[in-house]
Length: 610
Image 1 (cartoon, helix red, strand yellow):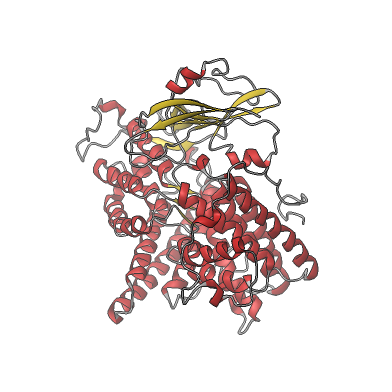
Image 2: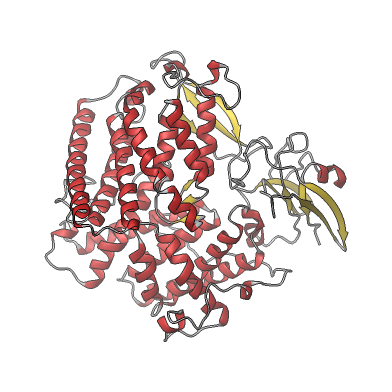
């Protein structure tokens, strides 16, 4: 299979080495097979191994409802399950996602603690899905329904595996397939201009395109160029015209996704112009046009919400979904309104809007916590709170947003609540540093940072973390808007951590060292924790050693590289004096450090190479 985006041939992924530990996949089942609504009754034509059936059952009862969030339940709870009956590629991809999602639930707070058996099982069925997809594409080259649906499931799987780059590549490839298909089948018209379309086209336009539109929006928020995939426009000239007013809240949400995409493209086009007094008349005209489109959408959306309130037909879940749409729409409105201003103090005028976003988000946090969602495939509350924590300098409101991020330990596609909380807590401290506050002291509500001390941009370079954390660049304009950029680099711990403890002060375990044949196990015990968060992974390759960050290199990825020698180290806390060197397949500072010192430094486990 040739990747649409890169042109390279894809033959699957390397099979992991067999795990030495016994598989425990059969030890936990979400529901009894005798349940009246069990997968055997739902899928009577499906036959497979016990592990396959169990994975499908787990997907049906646990994974699909969790992935779907507020808005995509039809896809995950309906379309994917139906398609799995006739398409092996979809069924195998479902099984792979189910295995990884179960692992996410079991070990969501410690990604390197994930079991090799789960990773191997998921990888096996990932490769089976790719092989089946190749056969399906050869058998029916004109149909994109299965390849695009499979791409969505692969994106989900890569998010779960932590491979953001690969997930973004799948997003770009899926969007390109959709754009190519539209050029062939829509005849230069908007897809909704046709009075009737066939079943496959309807499924593609009404289910797949909106999801990819949302994914395109998310990837562009993280710096990728928006690819102009709109639900109500053909994208031919990469322009976007006002769609007809939505007749349902669900359709209004899809239209909002289109608006986010076109507004993000506009903001990306501005670039550095606003800092160089180079804002053109065309930019101002386009901002006004987009604001008008948004105002029309918002007025129609509020009417739809009011009608549903009067009819009394909204469920509690739908009410929370409407609150989420409202929070996202306010965020978008502010972003567009301030897009041409180079001054960070411009954001101060939106205090009431920040408060409304926080209030709306508060209604959603109980939903998140009650369902213990570690991962959702759609954008939720993290993005609006991320925005408030960054752009709102009103001390109490900003701290409320940070507290809500900390209270919702989860991932939503590319957004990770701990990372947002950690990064923007540091931004807040940098901006308030001039006050000389003691820890936990809150400035007066009307004490806002001066313009020259405010952080304009946050840059997380793609380089490995050090012992102190991930290097993050904070860019400011201390010499005025026309002056040079000032870059300050701080280190912040990113990645999954235990939200019961402050990231700045991880627990100190009681350490015991025990020799077991060829393995030295360093046990750590803490009265409040069954396991500890792992910040570093070490790997021995060809008799050399390296210190590799968890975020860059996880145990199942080590297995995929099929190395002959492995040494895995789990660290429970920061150890500044032992880990001050990072080297790609080089020799880190701890190489000759006695094991007793390593244990005292906080290592949980050291597996000797065979």
